[in-house]
Length: 352
Image 1: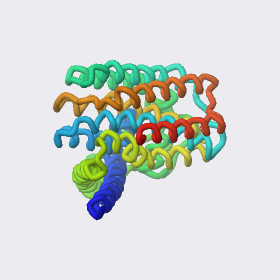
Image 2 (image 1 turned 120 degrees about the vertical axis):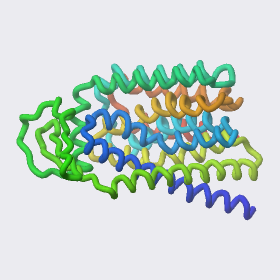
Image 3 (image 1 turned 90 degrees about the vertical axis):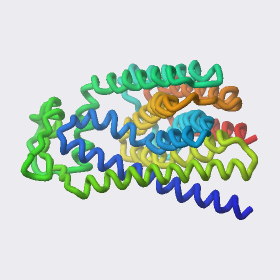
Image 4 (image 1 turned 180 degrees about the vertical axis):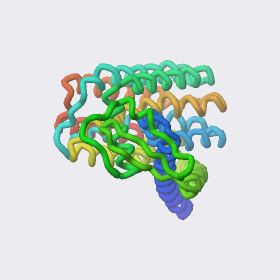
């Protein structure tokens, strides 16, 4: 019993450190990208999208290194189910109906469906090979390409990134052009970059030695915390006599989804429901393609029987349900309640 308590305590501490360090690393990477003149939307489509899945990615890589590849599929499938049924469900229950942009229905949702189908096909023989991992990474590149080709998101991402990292120091009403997102300049004489948002607002994201130290230190903390996180999963599974994939599909999936839940509920409350939907879509696509793709390059990923026989079909059904529910471009409170109930049923069946 004491060993279980210690393992659970280590799990909680390492998870908190992993999530916190991932957030710090992502923020520092965003700021550095702006200062180097990288397109804000490119930062949003890669650093921000990948940052939300960084805990899963690093943990999965270290799980393969620790010769526990079964954790990877359990973590990815569990996180994807939690993102759709729990995160979206709670956001819809806690606030007004979630409104969905037409563009998401026409482009992102089909790509989300494609990622789910890809994972089923890749995992159906019980192993995900390096070749299938490469295909997954190619799928991620296609998703990023479609994201970058969307003009309306460029404006939104520019505004959000600059507002978060630079503060407004002046600007004109209207008059901006979307191409300004790519014109952020770096002043070699100062340790700052001056940029112009899509709305013509001038900003100065300051970058100094502290930013570089934060970037490196937070990344080190991510790896150390992820290593202890994987060790705690192995310890808990061993003490309870259950498979590591069971812990990954339930406790770990919910734990890593806590930031998405907080962000999604807050975003929906302030009327930014597209952020809620986009957050889940991007996270699931990144989980499927990158969190499975990258670890598979280190060695074949075994697919536990309960993941292939139950959790994976549930993930596909949840994705299908999400697809059809959003066709009227709205997720109501009652639909949110249904999502949460279905997630509870999923956890009970996995645990049983």
